Length: 84
Length: 182
Image 1 (cartoon, rainbow over the protein chains, first blue to last red):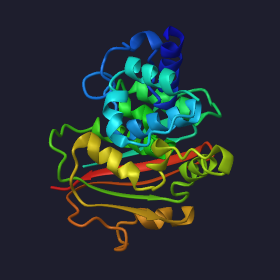
Image 2: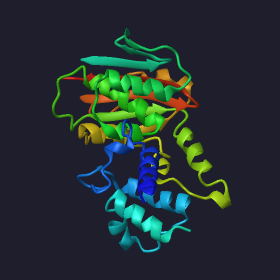
Image 3: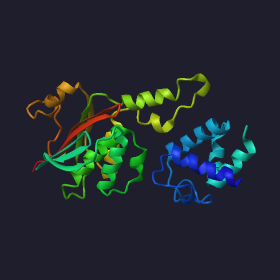
């Protein structure tokens, strides 16, 4: 799980162009949206693409997005459970 | 009152005076980042922009740093470009070319219109005035800036940014004018 969290942080930094950030700067328990990393709706779509492209996970129910993308940790847990 | 900014070939001029220069690099994004740091800006969204928007954003920042104006709401923004959003169009196309690797990128897609650069500037400075983006040939640039030409004029002629910018395959050029008429 720790490795997946680190991998996910690196991918998020690259895909979302979080300039100057390192994995250590991202708290895996902090909210991804709002106060945490301050991501926006386009970033949310990019995270959905990331999950499908890198882990083969298609998010069929958009209503689940809020819980899955609550933090890096919740995202990693979902990926670990559903990875193909 | 009028200020002019020109960004070209790793150099920046304000009213024809060289104010920033770096060693020539083929990677324009590196130059844009250096200029961003030189301007001491704190705006994380800059790094998510496409090169055309970065270029227009930097040109407008350079201009607005020349004036003391808290409320920019009434500014008009009239821009023109030649290559449109071709750079982002091609990048987006590359994400959907292969049916077996079909992952359209939302963050690239949002920049597949040239007038998005106006939106980036307007959001940054809370500008709500009229705006327009023309796509012209490079030869029409002088005509675009010609004050006697009625075709490309702003509506109220009071406070406006008028600029030509272009970006394609690492080649870039921007010439922006900020005008305030009393």
